[in-house]
Length: 180
Ligand SMILES: [Zn+2]
Image (cartoon, rainbow, N blue to C red; front, side):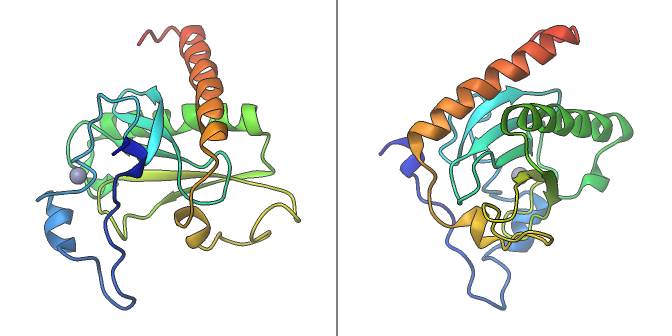
């Protein structure tokens, strides 16, 4: 089975937290920790940058082109309050690096950054470009999560966009003296 066809955790019935949620929150069998953070493709998304403490991926799911996710990769962390000052600052720097590349490449009207963890309680940012009315699913308000979660984006487009973002991010890291 190709990586991108791997099954995702089943959504919980409405009105319930996902199965084993409190265990996952403690880090027991956390589905996010199960990812191979050394891989260029984790099935859910394509690696575009290995940051200081997290990895940035262009996500395959949903219907918003340019939707990216930055996952804390050093260890299991459920809440950002579990990070020390240095880790927290590094996590945010990683998110901003990704955000700048997404801004440069897609020229969104606005960026949204969401740290939720209601399905998988491992610290990760959803970084979502928002667009003009007519092309944005919910102008002037938060996106319904289904727009990010349901369906698959065009694979060729995702691959091509990931290559472009990887290059932008590598160039930016090179300019700031970061060699990875
Ligand atoms: Zn985890």
